[in-house]
Length: 404
Image (tube, rainbow, N blue to C red; front, side):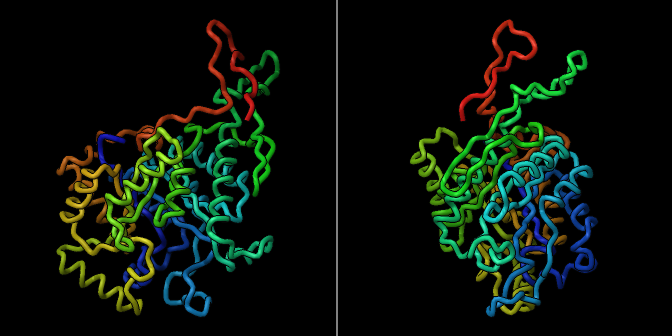
């Protein structure tokens, strides 16, 4: 676990509250523009946020009771992976973690898209893995009836995560040799087929993208219920839990993750982040009033439709909570701003310096600019295929393929 608190901001449209677009001002006019995403992410990067996650789904927006789109909230979204690639050149240190579903997406496309992001961002890519359970989403693809039970979806997602990982490993770090004398651009013995045959997926072959700076971008997974937590421990490097949601306590959730790691026989203690939706006000009363106004505009309390607890809070209160979570053993927090840019700006401009003052964060000037795995305290990714060089051997000493 890093010696300072990890701080991640979860970005979604005008914010996580369904009525946020009504108070977003000019931002609401450009939610589908690159300018909106670049402005928000650049601010998070400049002021010291470790990573941003970018939400995505195969639905254009929330659905109403009749399963039609809810026209009272933001409808329409840009592809999260493409947005991350577009804003990467404008940022310096922040991790870029798009949400990419594996339910209807081929693992090959997931792997190569995220490898490309890792190259473009110089080692700052991550992946929030997600399943897509609804018949509405399945109907867009027409290859399966949809409505699969959760166990089936998570089993398929485990296989997809494994295939993606094998494809990420399929090129050795030094597979490209550019040997002008012999006319060889690559050493074929350093590219390995990702052999996999499972219940849901069967893949043979290598990625078309050379191994990226991190080797394997860190995988994030939301563990807001028991089956999702078991999947996260199996497939993810970073686990997101939701204290307060459905009465679950932070210590209970952290203990559950550690127990699942033991059951899985894992000797790795994954960074666990507390996932919280926040509205930050100038006082507790002001924050409560602002949340009530949003809920009134939406016609219902947001907490009823969320998969995490919702906090109307102040910066000092949030610093205290984060300190308590740190004391329990959490590596950090992922904060979902209910309003963008109001709450995302407060996280970057007010919360970050307050955490520095509290001794929970280093000053932004001393923030490491290493790859995202390093910043999260995750060990470097060693390819399952590459063998150590033989002592005394020359160029080309890396062995050929190890059995998958």
